[in-house]
Length: 360
Image 1 (tube, rainbow, N blue to C red):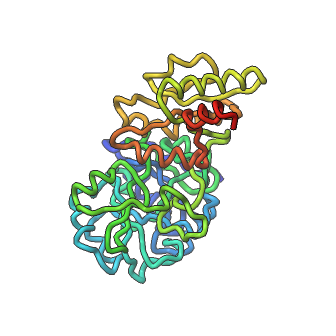
Image 2: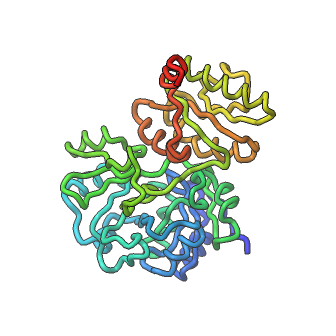
Image 3: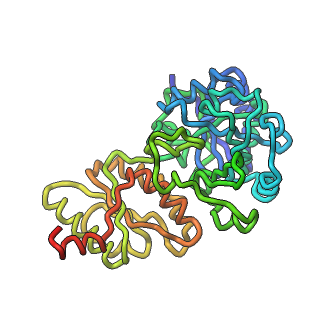
C-alpha cells in the first residue's frame, strides 16, 4: 500500500494532515516528515514495537540508535535522568536547531529506541512542520533519516517516496530541506562532551560555547567491533549505487587526476560521474559533471550533497569521482558524510605521484 502524501509549507500548515499524522504515530504507524536537516522517518519513541517497525522499514541494524525528537524543552526531563549544566547551556543556545544530545535515558524510553543503550539521543528540531507533528503525536517521535539504510539521506519528499513509499503510512511533503546534512551529535554521558557526528554546528562553535569538547576517535578510524553510541557511527551510509572515490590534494592535480580517470573509463565504454564545484565544473571535459555548489558558500555544498549522490543513481554511472571539500566551517561534516558514502576510499594525488615516480 502506498503512503499517503500530504503537501504543505511551514507558512501554510495543513492542520488536518498533521492531525492524521499524529494519530498514525499514536497508533504505532510510521510517518515521514521534513526537518531543517533531512527528512525523518517518525515512529512513537515510547513504543518499542514502533521503533522495531522503523528498523524494519529502513532495513537498519537494530543496534543503531534512533534520535528522539521533542517539540517542547520541558519534555526533555521526562525521558532523561540527568541534564548536565553544559547540556543545558547548549540547549539554550542551539535548540530548537540541528543539535542532538546524548543523555542518560529514563525508564520510559524503551531500549528498542536506543539500540540497547542506557543513553538516549534527543533533538528539538526548528522546522515548524516537524514541531506540529511531534506535538500532535504526543511529544516524542523517534526519527532516523527517512531512507533505506545505507542510501543517501533524503532532502525531498520524492527521495522518501523512492525508498520507502510502500513501506510506511504517510509522507508529509514540506519541500526541500534547508541544511541537507544530519544534526551534530554531542555525547554528554562522558566527563568531557564528545562529538559523535559533525554537522552544521561545528566543533569550533561548540568549543567557543563550552570550552573543552572532543571529537570521537571513531570518526577518524571506524571500529566495527564498537557498539555505536550514535546513529551512523558503525555502518556504511549515504552511499550511491556506483563506486565512489574522493580525490584529494592540490586543486590543479585533483582536476588532472579526475580528468585522466574519466577519460580512461570513457575509452573503455564506461560512464563516469564527477562531483565538482561551481568554480571547477568548467575544467572537466570527460564524464557526467555535476556541481555540488560553491566553495565560497559552503552551505550550498552541504545542501546539495545527498541530492547529487542520488542524481547519479539515475545516470547509470559505474564510478563517481569527487573532489574533496575541506571548507572552513562545514568541511568536517561534509567530509564525514562523503567518506562514509565512499567507504573511506580516498585517492591522494600527491601519494599517487610519489608511487609513480618510485615505481611502486
